[in-house]
Image (cartoon, rainbow, N blue to C red; front, top):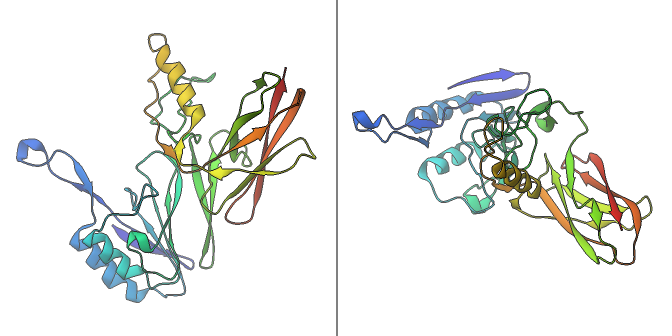
Length: 295
C-alpha cells in the first residue's frame, strides 16, 4: 500500500486481499476482503496532510460494494467510512469481479457523508478471463458476465471532479450501448421487449427509445438481471462444447447497467429502425440503432 499525489488529486492504493494462509500450515487456503489495522492507521495518519478541497481517490482490488442490497455492518468498513466521509470530494475504484458497475454508497450502507460515495467496480481488459469462442483473429470474445464487452476505463480529472469513460476493446469510443431486441417479428405481434445494455450506465443514466425519426419516445427502466445476449451466447457455446475452440463462458451475473421496456408493434409491418438513446451521469448522450423487420 502507498499514496501519491498527481496534480490536485490524492491517490491512496490499498491492499484489501487478506490471505488466510495455506491449509497445510493450518490456514484457510483462501482470502478475504480486509484492510487490517496497519493500513487503516496509515490512512488515518495520512489524511491530515491532504487538503480537504482536493479529491481523495482510493484504489483497491476487492470492491466495497457489489449489489444493490444494503451492506452488512462491518467494524472495519465503518472505521474506513468515518475516516473519509467528512471530506467533500471522495471516490474509489476496484476490480476483482470482471464486470463493470457504478455503486453509490449512502446511509443504508453505513456511509454518513453529505452525498453518496461513488465507487467504481471496473471493467477488465480480459473480460470473462479470456473465455469464449475465438473470433476471426483467434482472440476469445470474452464477453463480460454482465453483458459488457471487455475493455478498460479512463478517468479524466478536473480539479476535484472526475469523469469515468468506458472504452470497449477494438471498438470506437462512441460504442457505449448494445440493443437487444428481435430482428424479425411476426406480423400482428402487439409488442416486444427491448433491452439496452449501457456499458457505463449508472442509476443516474437516462435511456429512451423510438421507432424511426419521428416516433414517440419511450422510457426504458433500469433492471438488475442477467444480460439476455450473454445468456443466449453461453447457451449456444455450451451446446457445442465438444467442438468449441477455447473455454466456455462462465455463469452470468446480474447486470447493473441494463434497461428494458416494451415496444408496441400492433398494426405495423415492413422494416423499421429502432433508435435507443442514453444520457449518462455527466449529461453526454450516445445513440445506437437496430433494424426490426415485421413480416
